[in-house]
Picture 1 (cartoon, rainbow, N blue to C red):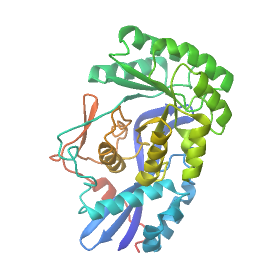
Picture 2 (cartoon, rainbow, N blue to C red):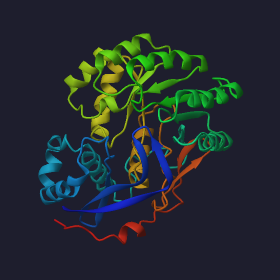
Picture 3 (cartoon, rainbow, N blue to C red):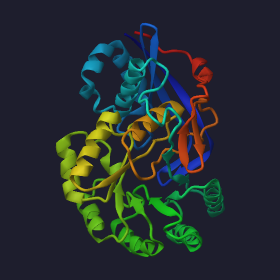
Picture 4 (cartoon, helix red, strand yellow):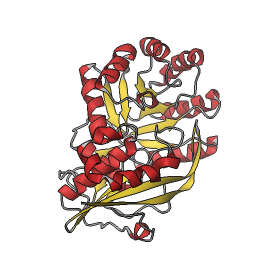
Length: 353
């Protein structure tokens, strides 16, 4: 088996804000495995200031992985500190196994018989910009809206959510919010009590990570169900997962294959979540359509019942044309739409092994 990789920079159509800052570009590394006439693709795309990986060391680590590809395939646990590479390698291997045409999990989804319900994501920004996004998502037919909060003052964000709820009942529109750890513990409980009037579905990561006792208290007292997101990053052993869930007792886990060691890592979290009575859903982490395609196919075969966070494929000006398509509030795979990877082909290949 031969292995190689390329680095590719994705450009956002417009600056995308979170409480950790604003994204205008993001780097992804693509690993290629070739066996016989088949080539498998995998995306390794850590997020700045969020992933446990060092972006500056990604290329050197991928050089090592490609140089010793048989070793890392046989011992994936050696990549625990590199979860996005675990995901990329796992994806490339599945691609080869299934013929190298990016059908990783054949299903009713890849046959275009069923779609995946997704939430409409509202990025942080000026109030008018957020209102425009909300209107666009509602006009497109979304029934579940997820709004990133924590960058503006709380009153402004509260009024935006209140405006949605005044027009649409909880039965008509599901409202999720994601604070990305922006609040202090005392502020969080106060804000959650006010937000409960708006009948929110859930809130992700209201306070910074690492405050297990405080997060546990919030989960006990909050009238809004709490989901853990960033809190899960860097935890890969079953014992640690169990300890976190037994301490905090969150209502939900929000899982990202690029951050949690691929499908295998997320599968361990799902197993623990179901054992401890927590719900879960899957979210992409700003991957290109190559990574999003893999995550969507895997997610579909999990038979998840709630809306997933897989609507990020339209964020980039230089994404790759793919069979993925959003129609209404569902993500679909349209086999008649072909992949176009010419943009990636134009990028020089790093050393091949």
